Image (tube, rainbow, N blue to C red):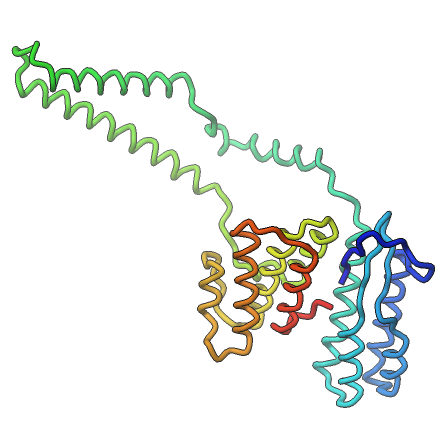
Amino acid sequence: MLSPIAAQQPSSDSLSLDQYVQALNDSLDRTQQLSKNPEGAAGLRDSLPASWQVRVDDKTFDVPTESIRRDLGAWQAKPDDAALKRIIQHFEILRTEAEGYRQPSPDGSSRRALLNSILARSEFHRVHGPTWMDRLKQRLTELLIRILGRAITSSAIPTISDIVVYGLIALAVAALAWWMYRSLRESARLETIMPVAVPVSAKEWPVWLSEARAAAARSQWREAVHLSYWAGISFLEAQGSWRPDAARTPREYLRLLSSTSAHQPALRSLTQKLEQVWYGMQSADADSFQQTLSELERLGCPCN
């Protein structure tokens, strides 16, 4: 896990990003050989530091290895293919995250050019604000309503028969109904070109988690908590805890788990934290993010 160390100078044994990636690759290679050489588990575990300190630009990050060393010890006591696979996946996730820091920042100008090319398509030609014709129609409608109101309430025009008055009212209602019909039809046409929502698990949970850690690296703690919650939802959805549905709310996800589910307490805590920080606009900090990661660990989602 890459979490920034506040106000701490790099130590002499801290690693550059390239050295950190190389250390992960070496550890990953040794882990993949454990199925053929189980005796190497003890040496691999002992070779791992309590945490890696990684230098990225002017920041130093702390990557603890406690959970990896614990899993290696458990695997040494009872070798299991699934447990070994989890350890390998843990190293691969850390390496993917580290390599993500070496990617260049996206070019904003290219994104703007892409957006302009999309908006230049024919289906967007009629997407615009109110035109002079729209404003004229609105003013004529308001004028007609005022005239009709005076005609109905005024006693100064006794020659106007009820038939004429009600005829004008019917004409105004018909015109208003036609205008509303055209407006709704145009809105429906525009809605058909909008993107369709996709299930949470369409973005795999390691990607959600990587984005959460990137937000934490920028000290955007509320965003980090928010993205971590959806990493947990994507993880449970990938495990088959429920049928994917893009329209669910956080409380609906919680109700899908039975009260006897082992994941119920952790998901309830994650949901409460999301509601307080994201929807309740409460402040968040590094401790809030760490608590969220701890609840993800309780779900079985490897974070450390």
